[in-house]
Length: 124
Image (cartoon, rainbow, N blue to C red; front, side):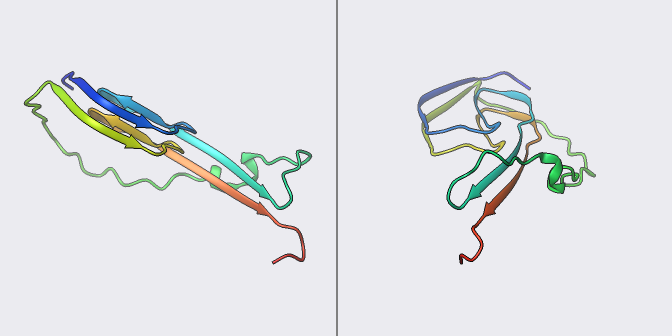
């Protein structure tokens, strides 16, 4: 991959969380991974009970990926060794997401989230 220089005039990112990446420049390999358990309990969360990734098969299953049964031979010719960016405004980057200004050779990102809602009995 030919190295290039990125010139960014203005960029505003409000928040980055949970194994996410913001990158200016070229990257060979990026593998952000995020596993999350989100618990929402009516009346507040009590700390006496816990949750473990092993309790839920979503974290043990093999990820559904696209088949890699075709090799594509490609060549990139960058006519300019510079990347010019005027203005970027990002509200949020989360759960193994990737925002980049530049080239990326290989990206393998994974995020698995189990959201649990616990409501009081008798409520609708």
